[in-house]
Image 1 (tube, rainbow over the protein chains, first blue to last red):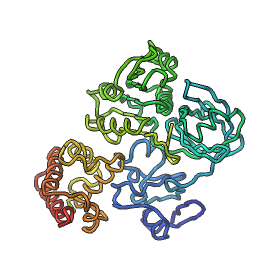
Image 2 (cartoon, rainbow over the protein chains, first blue to last red):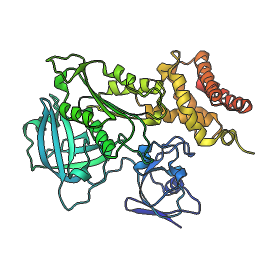
Image 3 (cartoon, chains in turn blue, orange):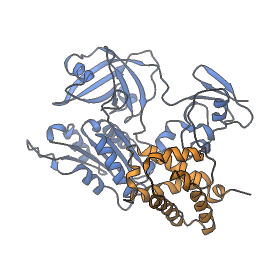
Image 4 (cartoon, chains in turn orange, blue):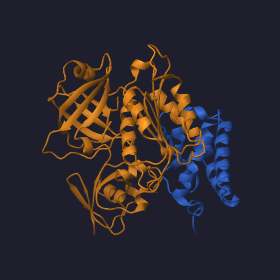
Length: 334
Length: 118
C-alpha cells in the first residue's frame, strides 16, 4: 500500500482510502467539511508524487499549477509527500543585492539567496514574508522571476509609522543578511493550455509589483491574448516605472499600459486623469468575459469593490485573482 | 437508485451553478448586504457548500448548524423566499429538468425553520 509523508511522519493508506480519511484516522489536524470535493476546505499541497485529475477538479488554475489537491478526493496509487497549507517552511537566508528608489516613496529591494541552501519555488506575483535583522516581518509581493534574475525584486512603499519601512529607508544597506519565508498567494500567471485569453491587470500603489511580475511572465511566455495594465494613484508622484512600462507598451502589440491619477498635479504628460475602477470595468473584453482573466492588487477597498463589480459583469469567479494589501504583518502589504 | 446530486451532475453541477447563483444573490438589493463579506473566495466556498446540500449531495450540515449560522441575521420569510427564488432561477438558467428542480427545491424548503430560527 502507498504511504503519505507529512512533515517527518508517514502514514500507510488502506485500500482505496483517501488522504483525508487517512489523516483523520491518524488524528492529524486537517480542516475539512463537505468530503465531496466541493467546499475545498481540505486543500493540501502535493510536493512529491502524482494525483489524478479528480483530486484537483474545480480548483483555480493557479492552485492546480502549484500542486494543490483536495485531500477528500485523493486516493493515490503511489506514495505522496504532502504539506498542509500554512505550514512553516524553513526560512531562506538572503542578502540585500540592491536598494534603489523607484520614486520618492517607493523602494526597490532586491534580495539574493545566500548560496548553498535549498530555496523554495516561487512565482512572480506571489508574496514572501521578509524578516529584517531586528526580527520585524512583513509580506511583500514578488515583482520578477528569481530563476531568471537570481534575486527577488520587491517594491516597498514608505509608510510613516511602519517599523519595517523605517528600517528599510534609513538603515538597510547592500550585503545585509535577512530571512525570507514563503511563498503564498494565488495571484500569478498560469496558462498550461497556451490559450489566448485577455488579461486585465489593475492595481494601486505598490500593487504594481505583483502585476509587473505577472506581466513579464505572460510576455516572456509569448502570451497571445490582449494584456491591459492599469496603474492608479492619487497623483503622478504615487506612480513609478512609467518609462519602462511605456516602452513595453510600444514594444508589444498586444500590451497596453495606462497610468491613471485622480489629480494630475504636478502635471505629467505620461499620465491621464481617470477613475481606476471605472476604467478597469471599461477595459474588460466584453465579447470574451468567459475567458477573461483579471488580476487586482493593492488597497483592500479598491480590490474588493472592483472584484465584485467585475464578477457581476460576468467574469468567472475562478478567473479573478486578488491580492489585497492589508497593513498587518501576516498579510501582503506591498 | 442514484441521488439528486448524482442525477444533476455532482460537483461539476455545483461548479456550474455557483457563479450564476452568487451573481443573482449579489444582484438582489433585498439580500445582497448579507453577502457583503470581503473575502469572495470564502463566500464562494460557502455557496458551494449550500448548493451541495440543496442538491442532496454529501455534506456535514446539521439543522443546528443552519440555526447557528443564521441566528443573528433577523431573517424574514421574504429573505428566505428571495434566496429560494434565486436557487430556482439558477437551475432554470442551467436547463435542469423540472422534476429535479422540484426535488432540489424540496430539500431547500426543508431548511426553512432552521434558517429562520423558528
